[in-house]
Length: 559
Image (cartoon, rainbow, N blue to C red; front, side, top):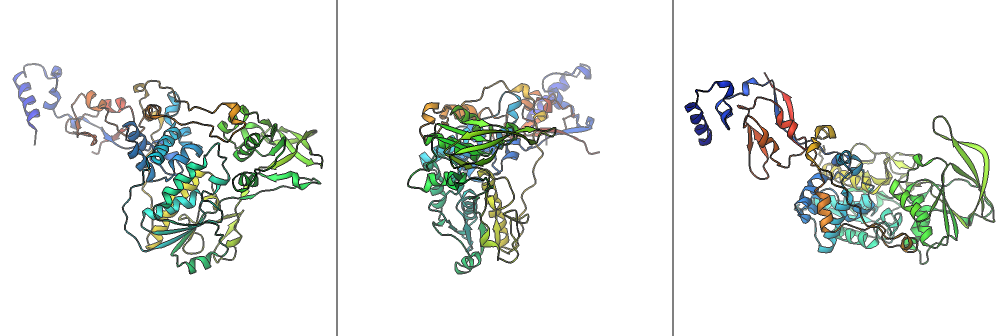
């Protein structure tokens, strides 16, 4: 049924049909000629997967909450984040933001400062006491979580949203796991951890601190739990045999950072401290030693900077604070006077470090080994079906171990050991546990194709420099555990959110509607996007070339 406007246009054209058909180009005249039959391909609207979403280990719909932030709906943005990640203020500080590495905006000027906007939203939520919205009836199922680190807390949160009663057993004196014991306060203030943990627990989750689990089967039976998720962090330091007559001078990184949180007095490292390792933990210990009064902190690493696992911004901040980095150096021994014998290394043709036979001596009051950590899996060795290799637990695609109803994630399984990966494991495990409790199978929705940069029309976007977060001055950083990196204010957060290119998803800019020569694009109203009238669309593809975010695709016409 043709609408009134179309009929009137047709009537006007018929009155002036004296013109040759080929030059009948009056405004709206295309509606008099159904040209859809000319097509061999047609445009379709679609939602492509933004690369930031694809890169997020926690599975956040980053683009969705950035859009809400663009509209100043910060509480709405918070609720969108909370669908996938219950700790935005923590992740805005401690996540290594792989989303920004993937961000298409970096090919225009620089990536959107996503973590800073997330931090702003998380801090707003803490200040204004926002709580997550969910409405799920009780399932009458109970689940035990072992470990109150990021993975355990995430699993507890999502299981509660799914209607289950959750209890967490934590061996330590506080919740947070490696967030509390492995990340220094200058990177992640403890009041932020406390606030976000409290919000999770306030959902009705029971937490038992100082409760070490030695017999998981006994705990499940006596507690009458229907399922269990184990998410114990990697707290056991890896060690190597370095000859020394005085072992008291050799400490482990995990122990040093843990003592900072649990000890009555800070660890005594001395004036000259050597740290052996090349990861973020090594850098954290070096910076911590500076703040404890060390005059000189030296990181010794056997390869070059490009092989270091430590992130660039961590290394940069350490150098600013006076930390010394010795590349291509390995420790051989330490005597009782504190003299450390080191051997110089050189890179071979394959870029691997090789010994040179050349030695130097470094004086130190203490040496800290930062060579990685392992998980204590000893309490699982006698459980039937459990397989442990390389100090981690084997799980299937549903994150379940070989023992029915016993799931594992975070540091306990083979994976990258970051907070965000752990949180993603917790969410995945919660969905799989929920399905298993009801004898069902959980399958995530299929992913859309990636909205790569070549799918966008970047001419639409002007340069907009990234917002740089304020930093504590270097002098204060060396003497205090105050937070180094500052947050954004409301105006900066709004500006940064609006730098998002909305990759792959229509934001109703009206470009397609305005440029279509056939008037074949129909507006459906605010928030409802558009549709094509294929009776008039001739498949010219102008809409695709003019869509800034790549939300239209040409597909072959079915004949």
